[in-house]
Image (cartoon, rainbow, N blue to C red; front, side, top):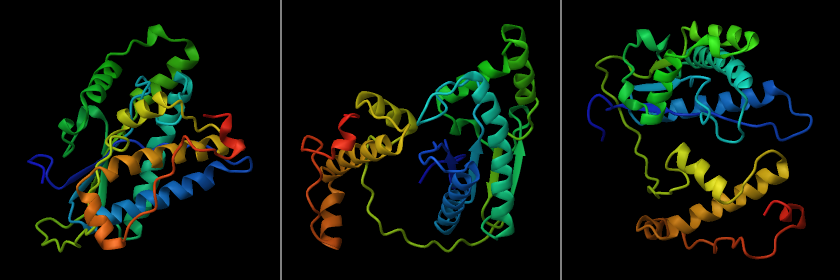
Length: 254
């Protein structure tokens, strides 16, 4: 329903995760994320979208993550890693027939990536990154910053459909239940900060998930679409009340 140039496009704003298990390996978490993203690409393709856009945020954008803040050095290394991961992920999706092809470029050579997809804060971060002065950083940071500045694969355009193809849409019968928690990344982070939610350990993540799900259920119960959902699937159980007694293991994180 979007107007041109956004019609038929999906923008994946952010992908983030944190290790929660002591014996968890990075490649295991990455494999899980890859499967989730590839499944989403297949879903939006079947819904009739033509393009998906991904962006590696500049390391100078301090709010480019969700679950934990990162130092500049960590963000620099993460930018390099994320660019390589996106490329491997899309190569795998192309080999599996989920996407047709993809293109990657830097901000100075954008093709078929409308910058109007970016939020004003993201665009401001891009401009600030282009004008960054290496002299302001220590030698170790300068080296990493130069590698990211020279990175050619930060903006990805993924083609899902053949040009001029007649797209057969699979109807999405799920009702749309709006939620401020899931409206965008900034709002989600604001809610987590206001509720003092943390995701550094498995126990913290479980409790934070309970609080967030409860908030979404309360929001959605007030939506007109909630009645249609109840008619289709039957009345729902009452939402868990975070004011009720909870497992003592989570009490330290309230």
